[in-house]
Length: 71
Image (cartoon, rainbow, N blue to C red; front, side):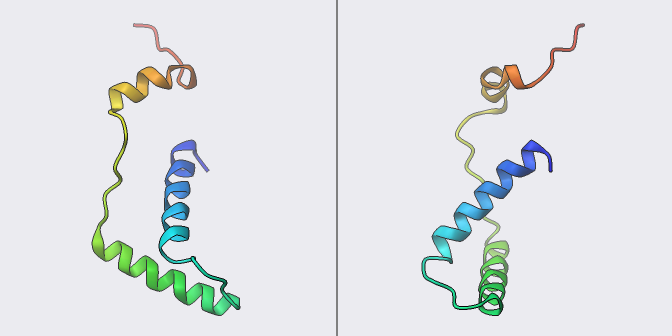
């Protein structure tokens, strides 16, 4: 999995934990149905991601993670 998708998955899992998994789930079937219902609801809302910095700021801050390409 790429780094970008890991970040997206972390956001997804955090939202899931806060909004759906606030209690003990008794079995796998219940967990599956709860997550599917949450996912349908979440996708219907089209909730955007609220990034805390711009792309340009990210390039500056994360410069060490990306190789430099000479002109």
